[in-house]
Image (cartoon, rainbow, N blue to C red):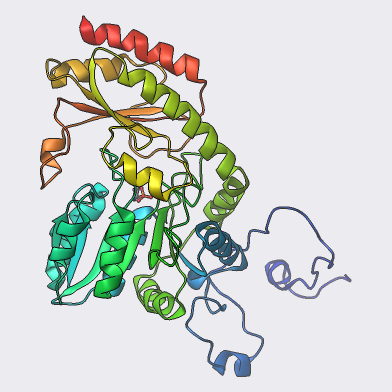
Length: 398
Ligand SMILES: *Cc1c(COP(=O)(O)O)cnc(C)c1O
């Protein structure tokens, strides 16, 4: 490394030193780039398949993001994976990628709220219609499938009210009709069940996740994934992925990679705390009903026992008795000390959010009752969380 005749800045950019080979460590390197360098003009002119697997430009992927995509694909039991800058961006990728003017999408009535708004207010601009279905009624669902139905969204368990769908019945109907099924698998996260093997020979075509939740685990990252087993379907989605310009910050990718080794441990630990608290809460006199797929009597409990490997996410919802007003339930949530008030879940801190479901469901609700509070359990000790809920319930009764 002799004395250079070039200017200092030029030398800093073109310095010949390269790190020696032989580095071995557990984490994947964080490769960042907008520009990806070609070896020569011949290399530049050589066509590269637009399959989401080669390097052309930082936007389309780096060794770091391809590593994450490969690990998410294996987590989901899939072959291919596309990453998106948020869970919602992953939802949008699937719907925009597969639907064309004149097509219809079927959406479960308890679908994640932003997927509902996408179907209700954004997709109609492109001449795409939607209908809501009851995820517990596979026979009624089958009757809705028509020639214009090109995509079916599934969610297990559904958002906020946590009904577990009749996945087997719904997927059999999709298969008989030849329509593409896409599961929002954020709740199952690849741990609770394999979405591509719900029953022998029966699985979804697409599994999408908000990596924002369990994969990250830190309440600090927004990211999403779209997994498939089918190469042609993956390439169709990748075509849209490229046009939407979905880029990812590689430091965020690194943090999600860092969350993956502990994903299953966190999932199971949070599951255990959640079930214990859900059962305790169900016995409280202030509560009409607790919604959690593992609790007998919770909507879709029997479908959950059929299809899962007995895992459940860190969410339960309490339906308060009708004598408690929305204002009283708000006061209960405000009185909680350890539960933050805010969206998202599967991070370290427990959260509680009150919901008025009458405004976010088109079909009849499968339960009666008053205001709902959705609890998302974090990683605090169960006894501390229970004591906190107990003291806040005394505020509710006051
Ligand atoms: C959070 C969530 C999303 C969206 O993820 P974002 O990264 O917040 O956009 C989608 N589906 C489900 C079920 C979710 O819980």
